[in-house]
Image (cartoon, rainbow, N blue to C red; front, side, top):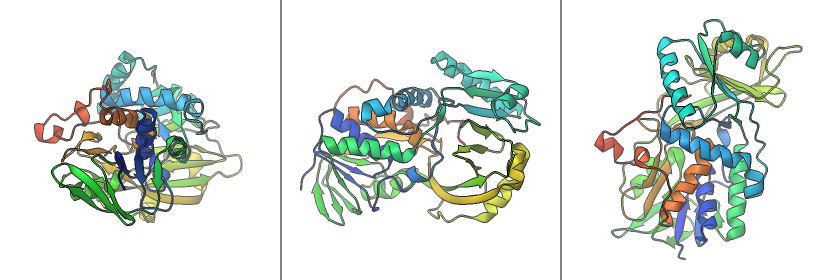
Length: 380
């Protein structure tokens, strides 16, 4: 079998690339997913947040384009995605964080994003039940929000399939064939000959890159999410506003009648383990109860862990990597889902030989060897 493009990875990023290639008339495409379903790895295990509030221009521009598409997703792609723009609220307590966010807000506003600068009382009004002790300032963007990662992934995939893209599940990549440029992919179902391969495997991208002789500085890092059920008469937000205590990285938002929350673990080491470590919950619990007192006596009804795909600067790698015909779109460091519409469109343009009208230099792999690194501050 021969394909014009083989995409490895059936999460939101691979599905977005497939959709945008099909939109450009490139439909002899095979999308490979090693699992039985699309989007059940990192895509299916994230909190669904979508925001403009980043510290680097490249990431803000990805957000602007992606959120515009989320707002019209059902009309454009033909699938509902349960998108709610109730805003993101960042709580700031440390002078160094306030200074960094002042610079970020100035950048966001320069790029046309409306972001409010709030005091502690203003933050409290955005999220009933919130304890703002110690909060010195906050930022709020009303057009930020949350969406359904599964709906986005399946929407992109279904539209790509209608256009002629082939989607293969339970198809594990065993080897990438290289004869100068890439020449094919050996899978558990046989060989697909191709001169164009897209590595969209998220936390597993370094392993796929190594098959093509490419060293990708992308590491898997476990992150936990918990769902809590409120006690009767508990006071917490009635909207889906996503609140982030930046000092601790504790965050929460409404999830139906319950509340979803999580927090980074600074002691976590890279690895592929996604079992729930309840010692992490023990560390989160006092922080959660302090910032949202209703969580103090809430019951945990569900929990899971997923993998961030971390790079040294918390910025993705997008574009050609290694032998001719090899492309990577991975390393989004916790914000891949929300940037999948724009990132997939940009890489599809590059593959199609179009001008993506986007400066990809912050996302090039060689930035690490060139020392041209601008790290993203807004990693949660």
